Image (tube, rainbow, N blue to C red):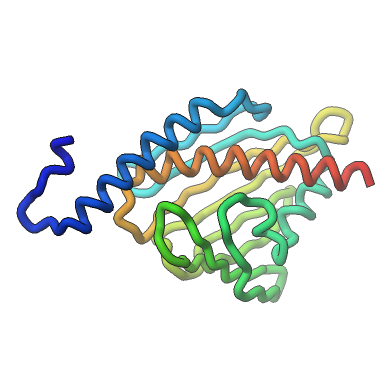
Amino acid sequence: MLLLAKQPGRSSSDLLTLAVLVFLSFLLVWVAEGVAATDFEKLEVAAESGGGVRATARVIFPAPPAIILALLTDYPHWPDLFEVRMRVAELNIHDEIATIDLRIEHPLMPGEHRLITDSRMLPNGGLVTDLRGGDFKRYHRVWKLEPAGAGNQTRADFELVVEIESMVPDWLVAIAMRQELETHFRIVKQKALEHAKR
């Protein structure tokens, strides 16, 4: 616990914040290790040397690409695809580009944080989302969707790069992001199954 020893220039609130972050990191590692094996082919999440966190995944969804794309572009209902609390504050669609102003509440970042992005569909099937403004330094997300199986499944390649305006260390963001993406993929799968049965 030498990390938490009183250091010159550090207030007691700084030390308390650091102690909470250390506790949360151990808790998140414990929870992540206890999660049952997932049914996606791969998920890699790591802090980048220059700052930020990169995640890549390949996921098999139990519905055709049209259904998955419909779920991912149902912008007013984006918060339903995540466990983290968020809300769509504003949505504008112009020239096939959706500008979304999201307000996010996250346990690692006290208060409400703003993420403004532009999303557009890719010509070969998929979706790309890029940072436009808000409380993030970087945000870039790509979904590439292809038919799989007998055409009733989707093979999705996913990439996400995030850098937050925060004192939270990137390695801790990476631990939280892994758990949140696992949950996100499960929610999308469940909703895809519900839509495919209609």
